[in-house]
Image 1 (tube, rainbow, N blue to C red):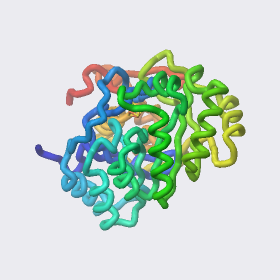
Image 2 (image 1 turned 135 degrees about the vertical axis):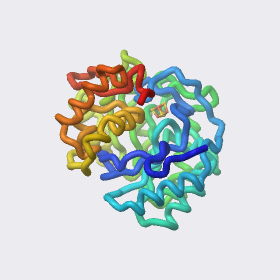
Image 3 (image 1 turned 30 degrees about the vertical axis):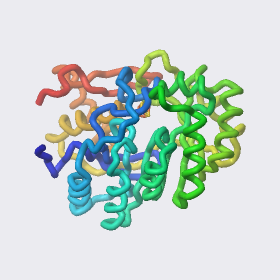
Image 4 (image 1 turned 60 degrees about the horizontal axis):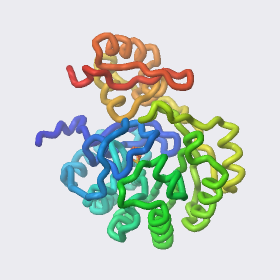
Length: 319
Ligand code: SF4
């Protein structure tokens, strides 16, 4: 395997994140390798789920790529494991996090769906991170199946127990994220079960979210701000609605812009404005480049809630 260390495909960003500042993303998995198939997934739907851990990429290769980015300088506030699926499916995760922590003081963050926290080996790997952000969208089995469409071997009750066990031994920051889809996991019975689960897990914070990017299923609808406010009040003072990020980014050369836009949207669909903030380009330049990419089929423009998102077009792989 040849890896371009100037811009290896398993690293992206640093991108501005609502919670983490400038975050260098680490993606250990082939596209959409996950134990779930959430209706809101921004990677698309219909992929086969898996709970089998596999070393998709060597730990040493990833570590060398991260070191290379850090050596180049520039602002990195966090090194974040997320990307194309569920990062705990890589069995080298713990070893990799520990190796990163020997090289840099930049906090390591793990975004996870929490589904494998039922296993002590996965909890041990995750505990090496400074901040762990598991998602827990539903605490009842029926809502869990509807919203997350998990691998058949998974259950909400076992995941909640796994997260509670993790909390007992993890001394870093634990932020639980709940994403609401209208009519799926926002019924009063869902919220009561969720509140109980939160009391059992004892996260430092609970981040409330809803659909803000084109979801896997076009019928999946977001909650309004007012509904989220009510849920926040019900769940208590650790709960907060995660706000939008608004800081300027670093500059990108105009000639690199089309390829950087395509790299960005391969990870997740995004608005021209946020892509511009992330890449340090002007929104006008991103829109201009976006229109050219749309013309030759490499980009698609998708409307959601009055906002226009860029996502890869049918010819996205062409140079
Ligand atoms: S949203 Fe995350 S957990 Fe859900 S299917 Fe997509 S990658 Fe997996």
